[in-house]
Image (tube, rainbow, N blue to C red; front, side):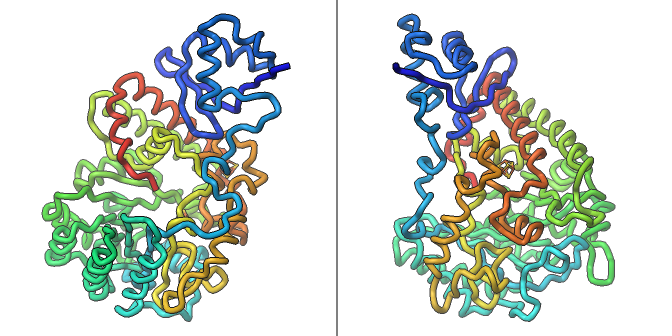
Length: 473
Ligand code: SF4
Ligand code: SF4
């Protein structure tokens, strides 16, 4: 007997139209009457094909459902993530595309929540604080040597405060451009800064060199000054605000984004967003809630997640209304997930760490990403001696979503894939543990994003074309 069953999916509606999110593959399917009726018949369990394909149009619909993996032969597995990614048991690590250089671990701010100073820190205190030019050059060489067929490479400068080591960043950009060109490759650069050291010359150099810039800033003066302070406790808003305005007035050829660290004491997403976009002129704002350490009074936990979700929902509503009119509201958390949904990204790993990305500590030790680099236990080699390929293979084998038992039945697993390794390391002492402390939040947020996607699909599908080309991290 030829029995078929429906693959795992989650249904949602937008303005009377019905959609299904196909869980293993992250694809979205619009349900017409025929497709809906087939899925409904299969909702009570596997059926004989003849019971489902009762007319020529039903046969056609069943064929289409099978072609996208929404219906499968009973007994056959759903399209597994491992088939999508092909890395369940890698024999060799994939080529690198990105390297994050921690050009310094020092910072001229002492933000109260910063992982560089707080409990989240994995970095060894004895490690070198500033990367020298030779180590930066060796890092570039490492990226190029490990990049295989990748033609487009990315170098991200990170810190501490990156501009404390501007004297190394400048020649490194020149060197990387030259080396990449020699190899027939292209390298793009990005940098995160707290803006305290931006001068007219630095801003001009960033613009002239088309460096992607993200500014860490938490919002209006009272918010910024409550957490982002200098060593003696003085707030930083009055120092950074004019410098950011100057940067934004000089550098207009590439969108500049703000990254907000959101704590339980500063949850005011609408107010922060309005200040950073309308008053300061940032193109996009991304919010990073502090969730990794429990018991800290500024960490978001419990009711804080509900508040955060309500505020994200309100901003998402504004985003959708703007999208319906063809304009873009720079809420980058939503843009990022919409891009993943649009492209049908089915992740086997939560992020690029260890996959196409590695981090380098100031002393040259290679880590899983910038947050692990230099932490001893997690080293993946050294730029002087090369990347430890065996460790990357081991990491990818262990980190695959198919090996995360807690995630196997979770409907957002193809988008979340277990969550940040660094958060898990800090919270549970094991980077492969799923971040179960915020799963409810992730599921609610993903549901919200699906609703937003459906709304845009109905009201102005052309808006979604912007994600066809957009690279989603
Ligand atoms: S939300 Fe939780 S259970 Fe679901 S994939 Fe993410 S970490 Fe795993
Ligand atoms: S998500 Fe976490 S593990 Fe991944 S790159 Fe970011 S900090 Fe590192």
